[in-house]
Amino acid sequence: MKKRNLPLSKVYTLIETGPVVLLTTADKNRANVMTLAWHTMLDFEPPLIGCVVSEQNYSYKALLKTRACVLNIPTRELGKAVAGCGNTSGRDSDKFAAFGLTPKPAKRVPAPLIDECYASLECKVVDTRMARRYNFLVLEVVKAWIDPDCKDPKTLHHRGCDAFMVAGKTITLPSKMK
Amino acid sequence: MKKRNLPLSKVYTLIETGPVVLLTTADKNRANVMTLAWHTMLDFEPPLIGCVVSEQNYSYKALLKTRACVLNIPTRELGKAVAGCGNTSGRDSDKFAAFGLTPKPAKRVPAPLIDECYASLECKVVDTRMARRYNFLVLEVVKAWIDPDCKDPKTLHHRGCDAFMVAGKTITLPSKMK
Image 1 (cartoon, helix red, strand yellow):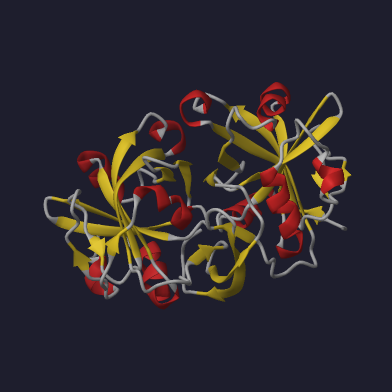
Image 2 (spheres, rainbow over the protein chains, first blue to last red):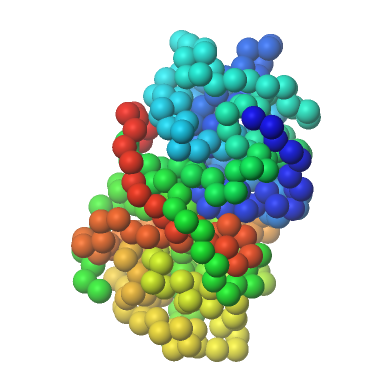
């Protein structure tokens, strides 16, 4: 998928809707991917994102060691991969191969972009002080990519267990909200 | 709207999709409401929710003083109120009256439920240590309400400025994700 640079000031528009994301890491050239639904914007620019990653996740160790990851945003077509990456562990399998995901080199971090995702955010881990109490990590987005042809992304939004809401249409309301 | 109790263990299914919420507070019997899009689940049970509320928000003072609020989840029909509450300040106006929202007494906190919202979460502020650096507050949900007739809520999800994604259909994927 051909992606272009997205200005960092626009990153919040992708995240504040609450999409499920695929978080990639890479340690010693071995990449991994996990599904993540608990995250929030914390600041606009530089974009800060808070996310909950448990020590029990295999990705945790690589995330803390490399202090870097990529948040890739999948759409409806990738539903099986999203569920599959949430059901399995990188301890046991190469999830990229298992779910047909293509890793591509990022610019600023060792973790890969997922080619099939319409947007990818290269992130550095900038604050781990809330990791122990809440499994909460603060990420700074240092480079953002988007498919310019994807105007109305059918992102997935977890509703618990096996239920996922698919993004509907976008409307405009007279808002001064940023 | 007639709402029933929602088990606290199910609260995450409402929040992890990323809906815009209407946060109510009450200080000296004066209630206020603000629109909030930056939040995340932090734990299942008791349900913990992290949210970003700035000192610049008029609600901030009452929130910190009473250490309590209600997160009310609006649907499509309340779009004008959602945008309106985001565009105005409780300093200048009674937003309940201005946007046709009906406050109802909560059980465990002084802040009101919004009758027109299909779900309402009564919350206590349990951790303010990240307030200074990230405007990030940790809430514990102590009582949850839901309209049992609202099976497929058309929640609103902010895409920046005046754009809001309306929740589409819910699909099932073979997931072991909680």
